[in-house]
Amino acid sequence: MIKDKGRSILTESGLKITPQRIAIMEALLTIKDHSTAEFIKEYVTKNNPNLATGTIYNILEAFCQKGIIKKVKTEKDIMRYDVETKSHNHLYCDECDYIKNYFDEELDRLLKDYFSKKNLSNFSIKEINLQIVGNYSPHKNN
Image (cartoon, rainbow, N blue to C red; front, side, top):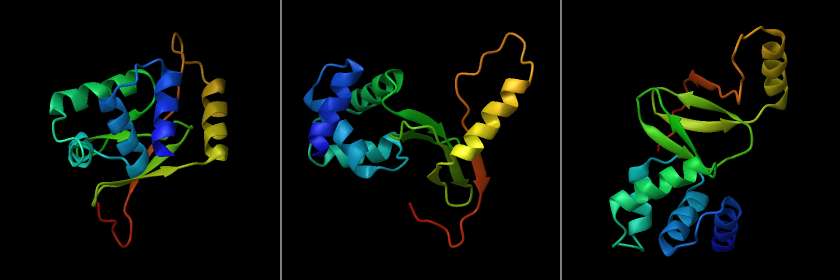
């Protein structure tokens, strides 16, 4: 099922389907979290030990460029990857570095309405992404 979904995502994006891309897409869909490239590498190389680190980074970058995944940078300056493509924001715990997707259509509408009334001369908003920083209690463990 995940393999089929991964193939479908790659096909729709126009990227060539390769075993390496399938392996990384399967990992992203299985993990379903805001993983680092290192965590993805560890996960993928369990079954694909010959997959080079550079290849993994290049594939992640290609996925970002095609809009399959997004980069999310944490307050601790750690780059993570998000497979959720629907509009959402993030709840970020700055103590344990945990990121959770936060879906709120009302908030999205409020922000869009707010900025539509502002005169942002010569600036066109493509998207609005909030990272709401706080703390979980008890803390999540990654």
